[in-house]
Length: 80
Image 1 (cartoon, one colour):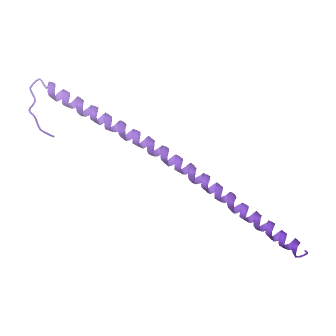
Image 2 (cartoon, helix red, strand yellow; image 1 turned 180 degrees about the vertical axis):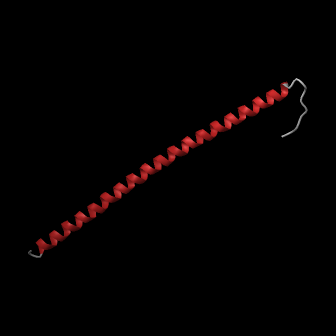
Image 3 (cartoon, one colour; image 1 turned 45 degrees about the horizontal axis):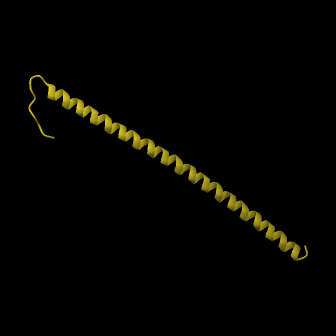
């Protein structure tokens, strides 16, 4: 930042302060936007993980049922 001398009226100083405040407000808005995006991404990822966990649970249950069917078929085949 370069330093400048301000007139006694302070008009330039007021403009610089207003500019700095506007820049700060823009940076805060950018931060808020990023935070909203991040929160949405985290929520979407969580939902995807939960869906995959449910799919895995269903697949494991299916394996168990298929194993039971195989065991029953073996018993029947062996004359039981």
